[in-house]
Length: 474
Image (cartoon, rainbow, N blue to C red; front, side):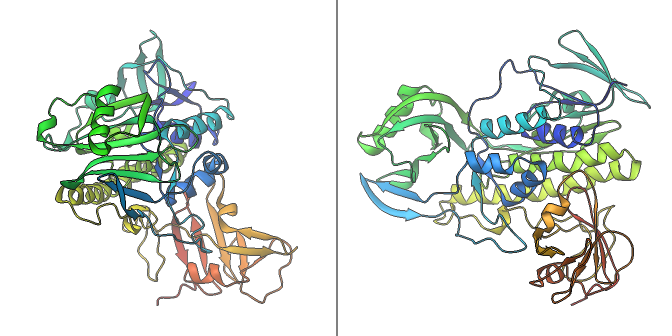
């Protein structure tokens, strides 16, 4: 087969998966029914764990260059600034967590960076190419495309969004609810007169919890806006004059909107596919789970679906492939609980509804108890995220664990006199020779909860695969 994996859908999930496959020299094609690339912000919040994934994929520098950290939000009521709020606490990097805070970049920009990275491997998105049918057998999948072409592949992945053709063709139930009682007007627009150093909430004088939000979009002249819609807004218009009138009613004028890039009326769809796999066909991203935008989880969860699935498709063994649904469906269910809870805070008018904590960072995602994670003891166990740590090589050069993990391979860490081949990490105070590394600050031994004699194997997606010998059980 010329194509080993066919990916339907070229959003962040499909692009991440394609990069993971391409950098492993797996023949992959990625198609999308759209005639042009999406232009808009949508999923603009990148969580700390996603930033770690982006470092491994080789796109972190571009994401950081084009994006920006969170800004405080000014609360305007009756023409006055009455408060200044912070969605996130300022958290400094640590040796184990180099990217502790959220990062903001419009979805279309993130997709552009991922497309550029994919092109470095000689793979390009095929636009205006829809999947129109497929059949699978014991050896592969035969797919038909809107171009008239027939493609034979070993695997098909539906990363084709919440209305997924692939999921529907498989007859997989999309379990959950669509809440028609909650609606929000969303889009991107220029807003002359607003300070781009802040987000802005314009609250109604009689009900400050209802109003309009504007968040600056890094690298663009636009703001992302959002406005909860009440019972009197059943026929809310999404055109620029109606959005301007809605803002003027809150501000009395002074902010001029223009260049409306996109707008929509959003309803909370909270759904989880009953299965993420049917034989040689897999679901990922919004095709498998859709979330409220509260907490900025949907895009991030989809990216990590692709990151999880890529090395497993490249491996191809039944045990490894079987682990995808178990691991990622469990995570998606948990994330749906987090985003739904945050949405309810907005509905209830909680004053801290805007606050975001560790539950949204996705650093605590674990595959403990899953098919690839044997039971263990200690603070770090098989299935947990592998922490970063600074080390020093025999030449005195500083090296981070994440640098050792970078690339499409598993990584073995051998602590002290531990058995086998791998990166040998010596305790602080040791003298390194050859390829040895010294844990000068003691951060690696502490983060991995080990003593000399331990061996830790890290999966290609940078989760702990196994820990043996010398593990502390504190």
